Length: 373
Image 1 (cartoon, rainbow, N blue to C red):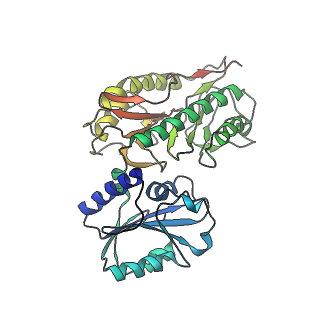
Image 2 (cartoon, helix red, strand yellow):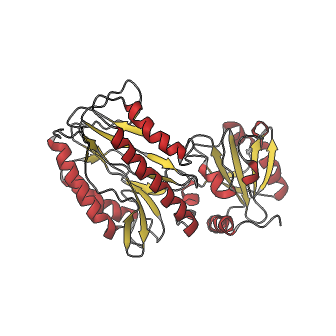
Image 3 (cartoon, rainbow, N blue to C red):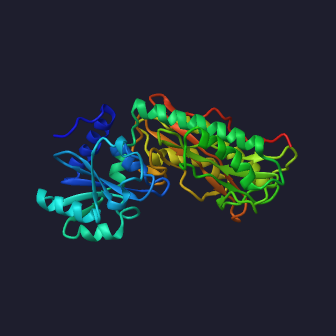
């Protein structure tokens, strides 16, 4: 056996190996790339954060895990942070395939088979029985350790303060880029690096439309908007915290006001609904009833597990029978849309499942925040 892993990484590998055993896998390939939100799985399993290119963590059912990089990726991060053996190869898939043949592997799970693994590496693995393992891998890492929860809370602290800075910088007539820049300066200073994915939903002075937009210079802000703030702090755990913002004198549309009523009902229902043993389906039904009864539909998932990858399984949605467990963390953000597809309300929270129920980790009240201008 190789060098002993830290207790936290040992815990993660043990959870993943238990899932591998349940599904009769000889090995698991965990794919990661520099695309924001997809690099976290590699960090989760190795300690290494990808800054450029891509990598795979290979976890045999029996034996030491290792991490494989393309040869051009020798200096694409602080390689000393990896706790695993690091291998560099011109064609990482060929290296993994060769080791698989030598070990006699037949059934290999892949996290990232559909969206992350490169085509050339997929082709090199021809002859192995490849099993998509996204859902199973995410379920194995859904329950957070105390160390992970410390990282989650730090990210929430950073995100919540970022919203407050965004609110202070906002004024009708300013550009979305100008206002978001104030928050991004804070996020960068607090160690988020490039792990931010912040957008705006704008429309008229009385309502916002459902489309997510990059905060650009040519997007002039009116009297009402929905910032969508998603960041990961230094520990690389993503969170989402935001609220609607209106100018001091804005008169919100009737649909926006009714959606806000439904949001208050969701916020009141979530703590008791998000108890260990409740299914994701049950939680979805409990928190979405106020929207559906008012005739609104939801344009995005009601919620989802969130961790070192921005969107993880399980999701809070119709027909998802996975049960919640203590120390799961969920992003909740009902994307309420009026029947005509125009008015929209979208606000984000990061929730912790405790023995007593769901607890929002941010302290922002559920309301439309009124600016001073």
